[in-house]
Image 1 (spheres, one colour):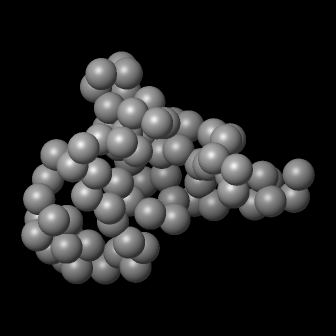
Image 2 (cartoon, one colour):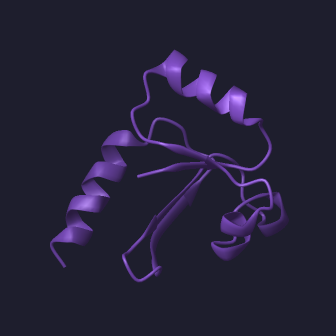
Image 3 (cartoon, one colour):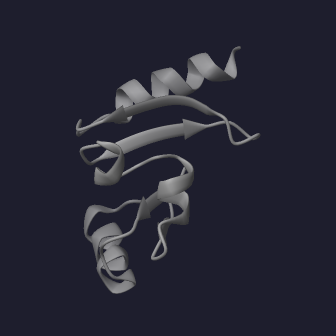
Length: 84
């Protein structure tokens, strides 16, 4: 799992992770390559935060946006995808 942001600074992302005790890494996507590849962001009609589950081949298996506190439901979705 990674967090991707294309609008905040790298310093802000490090502080955000530390303040919230987040253990997964963040990527600062300053050129929006990841955002464009997976069609994330306002240009694609998404409202943050957007969650995209991608398999090892880069295929999107699940996406959801404009919902906070999705940890439990994402864990369930990941488990179901692993069982397929």
